[in-house]
Image 1 (cartoon, helix red, strand yellow):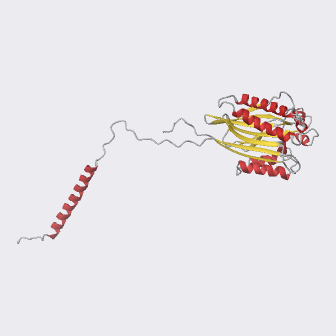
Image 2 (cartoon, rainbow, N blue to C red):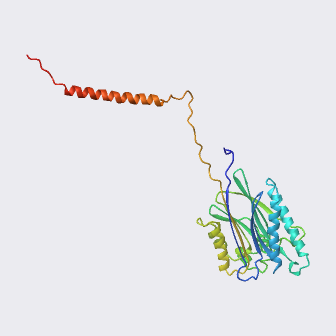
Length: 314
């Protein structure tokens, strides 16, 4: 017998796309989806440092996060686990940069990740990011950006010095104020969002959001007929159609609440003694009596019909 207190697990679906684009010689973006004891982990990293160095840095990031968070207990603190994974990734990048290989000397990476935890039938998305790789949430027909870039142009926008449109073509558009590998210590920004049925998370590098308009991204993610695979493919196509000048890293995750359990089957219970059922023998006796009675009536009717009437003389 199954435990009636066991709740069905929520449904999570994932899709990813990663492409070097049409201009770059190497793909320095990395994407990864890993199942951990704490929950499902999705990550996107954008390497910094040019040929070889950037690609190596982004791979170090997704591997370090996957390894670190996978080693955490299921009931651990997600925020603490993310902070420890970030520190581990930063240390590993710096070790590689000091290996003596000139290609690795200035290596670094951005990261945006989501750790999706579930508890008592509910789900939470723990978002962590460093740099300008972004996280978005699609809910109830609206796409909301969950992260703020750690970049020079974002700081200028926060000070109302430039507009979002001006930021797209600003000469410092690619200058980051925070990244992994470039400082001995770097703080990862962490937030938590409760997930609702049908919520879709989009994680991506600037190879997507930097060249595809917010409206176009929103139209794809909000398409009610599209599954996560459709969304990832269509967003990649839009980035390539825009010229594909940069690497493109995309992760899409969708959450669905557990299906309602089947209604229980109720057994009829009487307050007093239940009504007595006829036994098979009683039923058979009644059937025989009915047949016999019918035959007798038929015989009597036939006899009455066949006997002639006698009339006494007057």
